[in-house]
Amino acid sequence: MLTDILQNVAADLTVAAMATGAGYGLLRHQNRGLAHLLGAKGDRRILIVLPDLRVQPGGTAGNHRGTGYVGQAVARNEFEAVVALREMLSSPLARLVGHRRSGREEPRIGSSGPVEATVMCPPIADLQPALAAPEPLKALPGSLSGRSLLLIGGPAYNHLSDIALKHPACQAVPELQDGEWGLRLTVGSPRQFYAGRGPAHSGEIGLIAGFAIEEGGPTVTVCAGSSDIATRAALTYLQTHRKAITRVARGRSYSVLLSVDTVVGTTLWIAVLADGRSVGLPV
Image 1 (cartoon, rainbow, N blue to C red):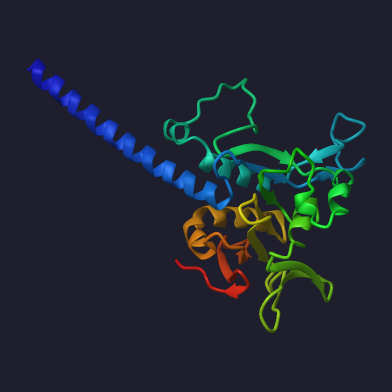
Image 2 (cartoon, rainbow, N blue to C red):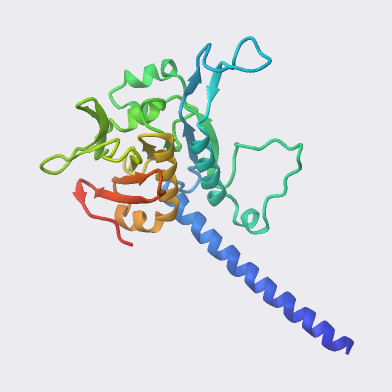
């Protein structure tokens, strides 16, 4: 009888080991696919850059403070989306067994897997030398250069997104039309304009745009939207549709424009371009 029990235990352990190995392999494949799309290659890693959102004096209030908080801040929707993305990019083994963290341990935003760090966008003053250069993305400060960049949020608060969306490889750029900010395609005839707010109050627009700064060089990916909710939707769409986007991009510059319904919670593509051609997005 003891022999039977030991055989059953051994069989259960074998099945568990096989399931763990299969799970590890699947997560490792997912990790590699998304990391490669974002420009992780060899020893080149990804730097995630959050907007330079700053609270000015008088911008906050507290019950027991004479002066409110002043300094950098992060929109909750964007922060949570970045945490989810970093979770997907983290070590497959850590994802498989789960992260164990004590109540006293501080959350880390440093190195993890193909991600070097998550940082705030530098103030515009720190980027002036790059802005004065003929090709700003090739003249970024040392803390940013040589990395593939994932830029969160649009030009309003992320100065690097502003620089990136002016790069010749970008196929959709922010534009103000009739008092409404939206995205204008830089290719096609006519060059279609998509308003940042749809006819319904729940309608928003999102953008995923990726390109290489130079052939074989670091990749820049912009995930932005007409609100922090739309930015979060763009980041989520990038994760869930990474395979389809990879098949479309094939290493080329690409742009995916998204229609985001903030009430229903749906996100659908409305325009997809690769190397200046409208290509659609396979399911």
